[in-house]
Every structure is written in C-alpha cells, then in structure tokens.
Image (cartoon, rainbow, N blue to C red; front, side, top):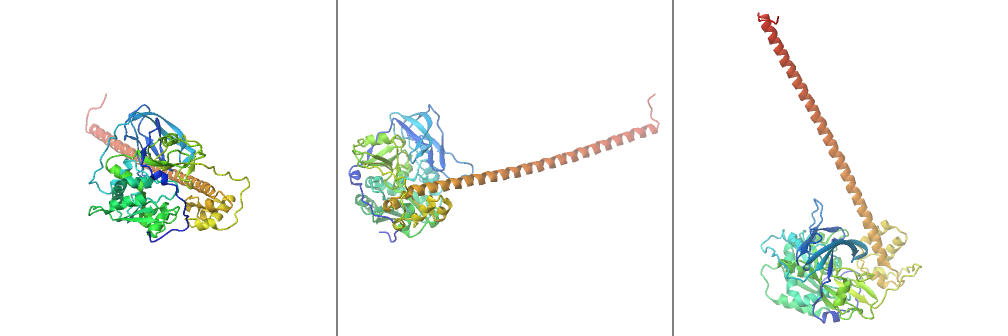
Length: 509
C-alpha cells in the first residue's frame, strides 16, 4: 500500500472480468495499414520510403522531423508487416477525430519474421534513450509521448504505471498476467537509462492475477546490480492512473504546473512501455500493441495484439463484430476516451482500448444548464481545481481568467461531468479552453521566434554591410597606396633618364 494518496477521485465499478478471462489473442492486420506521421501533438515524422517501395516487417519507414538544435529524440516508425507503400494521404487522427494528419499507407503481404537488431548490452546509459527512440518507443498508456524524451533527465525514482483506473480497460492487466517477467526486465532497462535508484510498480488491488504474476517474478533471484523493485497494490480509485496523481499517491511529491515530473525526481512509464523496452533490447521494434476491445456492443470482449495502423473496424471484426446493442464507439475509456463518428480510423501507438457501449450520451439542451454551486465538482477534482469557476470563465469567454484559475492543470478526467447534478458538459468546455490557450501560446511563440529571426537577420545584414564597407575602404587604401608607389617609381625613372642626358648622352635628332 502507498503511504500517500491524492485529492478527489471516485471508486468506479469495473467491467474487465470478461476481458481478462481470455488470453491475449492476435488480431488479423488490415489489408492496408494507415501509419500516422503525426506522432505527438507537436512532433511529426518524415517518411523515409517512397510510394511503390517494398518494405519488410520491422523496417524503418519514418523518422522524427526535427529542426537543427532540437534536443528531442522522438520515436521512429516501423512497418508492422511485409508489404508495399501505396501512398501518403491525409486522414482524421484517431485521438483528435476533427483534425487530420498525414498517414503512410502500407498494403500488407504475407508477414515474415521481423528482422531484429540487437541493442549493445554494454552500451552506456547515455546511449540507451537514442537506441529506444530508434526502436520506436512511445508511451503505451495513451498519451503517446516519445519514451526516449522522458529518459534524458536523471531521476531517483522510476514509477511503473499499471494502475488502469478506467473501468473497461485491461490491456496492462492482461499483459502482466502473461508477461510479467518481460515487463520487469524492461523496467530495469528504463531505470538504467534514467539512473533511477528504485522502481515503484503500481497496480490496483482488484488485479489479483496480475499481482500474483508479478510477485512470482519478484520472488525469483535477481541480479546483484538490479535496481530494487517495490510493488504497490493501491485501492481502486479513478483517476489513479494519471501520472501526477500516481506520483502523489506513491511519493507524496506534487509536480508543479507547467513542469515535467523530472522536476521532482520522478519519471513515469506504462507497463506496456516497459514490455516494449524489453523487446527492443532483443532488437524488436514497436510495431504491435495490446488493445482492449470491450463493451456490450462487441461479441467477444478481450485483449488483442494489434498491428499498428489497423482499422477499428477490422479489430472489432476480430472480436466477433458488433452486437445489436452497439450504439456508441469510443477510443479509450468512457471517461477520458474520444467518441468516434465511425470505425474507419487507424489504431496507433497510443490506442489502448476500443470500447463499444450500448448507450448514447444524451445531447445537451439548447438552454445552458445552471450551476447550483453545490461544490461536488471541486470535491472530486484530482487537480484541486474549482470547475464551477472555470465554467463561469468559459461562459464569459475569459480564457486568460481561466488560465489564472488553473485550467491548464485540468487532466480532463471527466469526474466533474459525472457528479454534476445539472449535467453540465464541463470537461468539453475545459478542453476547448485549453486548446484555445495552447493555440494562443503557440502563435505567440511563433511570433517571438519570427521576431528573433528578423532581428538576427538585420544584425547579420548590418554586420555584412560593415564588413563590405571595411573591405572597400581597405581596397581603396591599397589602390591609393599602389598608385602612389607607381607614381614614385615613374618619377624616379624620369629623374634617372634626365640625369643620363645631362651627362652627355645622345639625344634624339
């Protein structure tokens, strides 16, 4: 048990029994895989293959598109299967269905074994992040943040996050049940990369089979130089799987707003990321991930090993297809997940769950419900915010006031929506506020960068003009000096010629 807790949260009923009752199954890849080149919000990839190229499973198909001086590492992209590149086209992004981004289209042929590349076991810890970036590692908990970029900071604690708090998701639990040894092996590599002195593995107390599997591995003899691992069985409480809340629950440390967890000496990685790290240490790139397919709207709920780029429709087909109860399609859980308008979206590295529910969210009335100031939203808010105040700022379109009240600290967990007696759609409005503020900040940063480039250009042109003027002045002096010398020489020659005539030399007749 953890010695600390976190503010707010709720205990929610779990719906994962049917999922973990079955072993992890392989889902057939789609005939055409759509691999997104928009990996993270501000990180794109540059394709290193051309249309018509034949590729093999595990081959690098895109690399991070980084500017000179950008110290990020990103995550490379690899072909999940043998096939042919048939195009690059803009498609809706699965985590942001209203936005589109470039996707690399791979027509699948019969898959061959992945061509592996072994990582150097003797390489220094400083080189490990770059190696993991080349293996394509991104956070598999849902955020899809490049894993290597979280390892460039030295910390004292690595938290391994297996606390799946969304009530329908069980991909991490299933992975631990079947591959706990690989997860803990990968955790050692991650700890080595960031110089962590301890590993804290967090699970929720209802994950009994996963807990047993981890304890069985921990009872075995480990290497003398291994980083010590401590298992925490936390009470089930949403949103315990959020990084900031988990750090507070396990260490008592609070990450300041606007800073990364490394500021308090902690880095958090998902257990799926640790598993992928272990495979990367064997030379296998990240090309597949475990996805929970669940809900009353599918015939065979379970955990499925899915090739990246596979369509939601094909994954649901692998789970037996839709039932007559299917009404609502989500990527992710019911609280933090994103509603999809259709199933023609491609799963990516951060896609941890496909959820098909039997109910449709009731559309909001045209008249905005009134806040009765009950305070329930503030009681459950894990970020210690006052959602009713943020809502007032949203209604008045006062984004900067909302920033001052802490809207950027909102983790969009959806608890305020769940407990609001007026059924106000708070989270959506906070998400819109954050996006507006992010766009405003991004434009300001772009304007500042453009101004700095303009000033640097003017300074460079001024220096070049001064250098040219100096060069011309020096050239003039050199020319003047040369003419003076030439005149002196001519004068000296004339003087010598006159002297010879005075001495009786012949003159022209």
